[in-house]
Image (tube, rainbow, N blue to C red; front, side):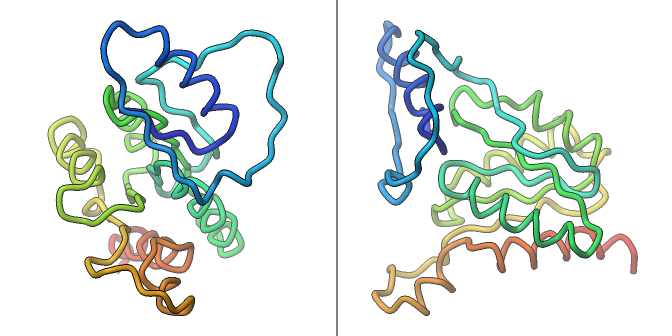
Length: 184
C-alpha cells in the first residue's frame, strides 16, 4: 500500500509498483496534484518500505503520510520558532511499514505524533502507535499523539474544513502536548 507525498515519490513508487508480481494499492491524494517538483528524466525507482526523513529534529518525531507530510513540515517550521525541533518522517508506504526508521527516530526524540488524513478509528496512526508500543515503549516519554481528520462528514464551509483536517495548528497542539507533558 503506497501513498506518496511528492511528485518525485509518486513517479518512483509507481515504477516500483509496476515491477511487482503482486497487486499494489496506490493511494494518491488529488489535493497535491498541483505540487511542482524537478523530477529526473533518468530512470529511478523508490523502494517500498523505506520511509523518507524530510526534516531532522531532536524533540519530537512527526510520522506523516501523503498530504500530512506538507502540513507536518509547516508545523515543524512554526514549532522551531519556539525552540521545539521536530523530526518529520514521510512513510511513503504503509505496507510494508518502515518501523525501523520510526523506532530509530523515536529513540532519538522520545516522543511521537502521527499525522494522517484519515479517521482516527482504524487508521494508519493506530498501527504506528501499536507497533511503537511493541518496539519502543521504554523509549517514549509521552503517549503517541494522533492527529487525524475528525470523525464527522467533511463540511463544505472552508472554515469548518480547516478545523476538520489535520492542519498545522492541530499538529502544533499535539506536539506541544507531547513535549510539555514530560516537563510538568
